[in-house]
Length: 207
Image 1 (cartoon, rainbow, N blue to C red):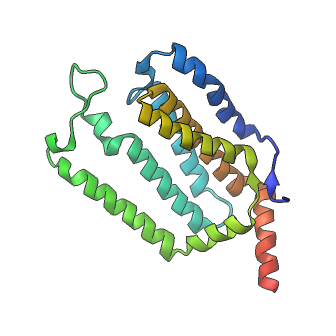
Image 2: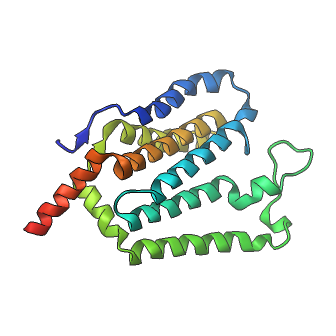
Image 3: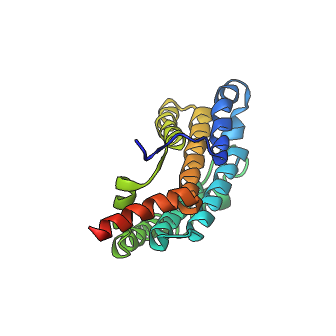
């Protein structure tokens, strides 16, 4: 129980704001707000960029946070469909984009993306980042509210996608990204989180 952190950290306020905006967004916002390259999608990209910066500037466990930085890149590329939704819109058609098969050399995009994910996985393994992840799983402090918001984002984001509800999907997906950012920020920058993990590592090494 001592690992559970019920403190409401300032960075969590972003998730709360988007949670409160879900219903108004679903009821009043035009669907175009949630299209590709829209305000919400662009905000998600900004959140991923900030999260990436937190990762590469982590104070401890550099290899592990570098692995998470690669995850940020993977998520960023997923959001822009490896650039397809930025560079290849269908002129005159709203929220429509050419398929890779209709783009010169487009057939290379998905294999290259897959190779990048494979390289990222290999880095995670060979840098022994999985040991750090396991240590965090066993010993790190848990920001209760941010983990709750993370799972809200996953569950309702999946629900919104299945229902074809753009507002629900994109708003809760943003909550997921914001919670992901908050968790990385706390574990990589917050001194109490860092010291808690270090203390357990030190105790284990003395046994």
